[in-house]
Length: 94
Image 1 (tube, one colour):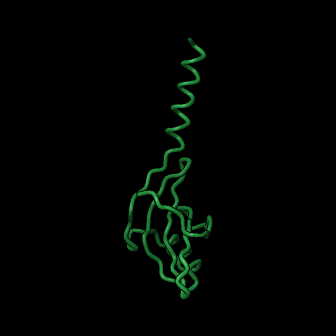
Image 2: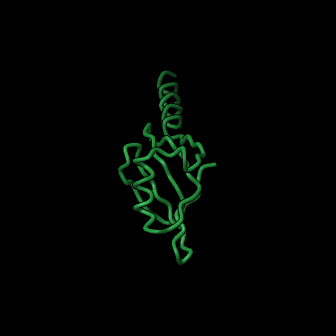
Image 3: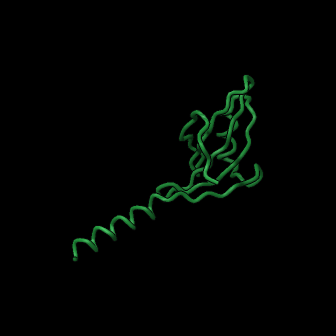
């Protein structure tokens, strides 16, 4: 019985930790260091759909980039302005 409870508790805690929390933002709400990194990563493309997310306990900011050819990418930046990734557009948490 104790082992079953331990497994259930571990599974519950793991699920709660993995859960992402998202908040939509305006461009004005994105921290300056984060926005500067996003603009550089966009390389002239249009930024939109800004979000603040908590992943694995860390705050990250994401935005959609639409380049001149119409290709959609997503940029992810850490709260300190460090570029995390630029990748193909993925389903956003909403």
